[in-house]
Length: 450
Image 1 (cartoon, helix red, strand yellow):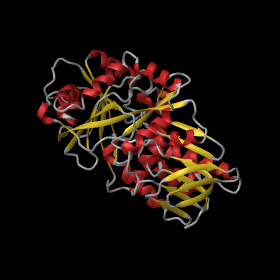
Image 2 (spheres, helix red, strand yellow):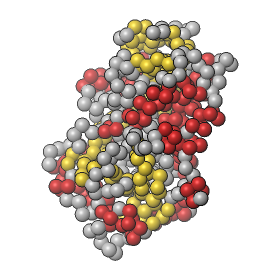
Image 3 (spheres, helix red, strand yellow):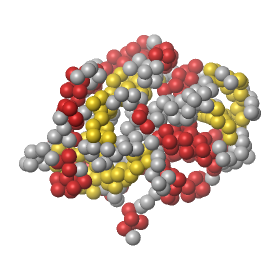
């Protein structure tokens, strides 16, 4: 066991694991360590029961601008290419039809304009606009029981990658540890991180380690650690706990409803589980919780560390939660947790996707759902949707809500390049080789046609 490393990564979810893979396989950095507080890699939000299992390309996410979709698309294709390359038997991912559904004239016109006028059809060559008959061929339950005069339109693509991000994280770690000089410590909690000027001191419950550079990829805890070190003072978090309802075999693939720009986490979708396509998941619900990890009271104190109990934090929360769209949504989601009443209240969301669904068809999933930290800008007193990275002197803090898992390899590529810059001219990142093993393996539309 070495006590000195060139790079230490804190956090063994999809973000930390993908960086370990990128650095170990495509740089000449000699000594790298990853520390994960859980006994297993990706045991918290990256576990397959704790997220939507979706690989977000930006094609059916209707809250994305074209620029945002273009940015996310590359990240998704990097990961899809990796999965195509290392998982041909589909043991840690599945590929199914995916669509976003518009119901009624107003939604259909909005979706049609997005596809034809706003450039999404051009950006995503595999994306097709389909009507009622083709929707029924792919997803019979979406059409059965609907008013025959009600207009239906969907944007559909075969690139419906459903991903077990926990198994994918384990795959990254497995690929990394085949290289010399890579150590992975599970069941090892980082208790203190300090910048000693010439190196970082990383104290853990397994001892003290030193490193020239550090990347903290610990989800919500990344901001907690950043604040302890004097970074991210103008940031807080709004932790949103997501849950799901389960049904038996109602959908073949993934069906999204239209999303609102102000509430990107609010649009309910239905999809078949990654490991059991006879199980259909509907959700997520979204409930605000004062904890950084779902169901763990020990992280309530961690939340208040991040919240800061400052006037700016209280004013930010007050400003955000007083919004006339967000507040009713938050209150409505509290009802979904109530026995029987919650299921009855959630049923109309399911029926927007599957009109014939009845109360007895759905059950609240037990043991499903994680916490997605929505970033709060305490200067602007507003939510800052998307991912956040804090850069310091030879240290990076990654706080990665959706679509962080989808863009994990793009983030890893960017961070690997930053780390070699931290360490100096003796190191380099082989981006060409990285792309050859990832995005170059992604099947293009023109390749599918030949």
